Length: 139
Image 1 (cartoon, rainbow, N blue to C red):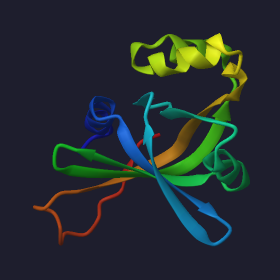
Image 2 (image 1 turned 120 degrees about the vertical axis):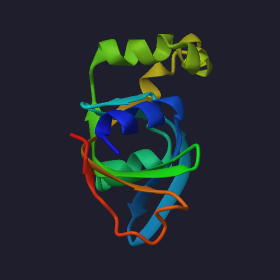
Image 3 (image 1 turned 45 degrees about the horizontal axis):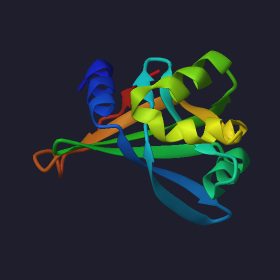
Image 4 (image 1 turned 135 degrees about the vertical axis):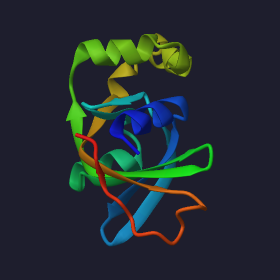
């Protein structure tokens, strides 16, 4: 599978599970991808969330997408993105209408954008269940 196919699949199936670590305990939660391309995998969270503190303490993470029978696990390092243009693009995007209340209530400063970089992926299907994993470098 090529990086371009992976980007297409995850952008079409943006729900994913994010794994982080808190002390020695793994933590996993469902998240919503904003977009993915050769520059990284972009998502956002609030600074009031436990996941925010976990990322700040240990930026290594793994995302797991389920895309029409194909599991895609993406591993990398999370970097906080401070680009105001990107934040405004997120707030204005039709899939992020739920964030409009944050702006209306003056709490949009809670939103923080992260990008998973230095990524590699492995894929899994029932057909490839027992085959060795093939790492795919994404960026």
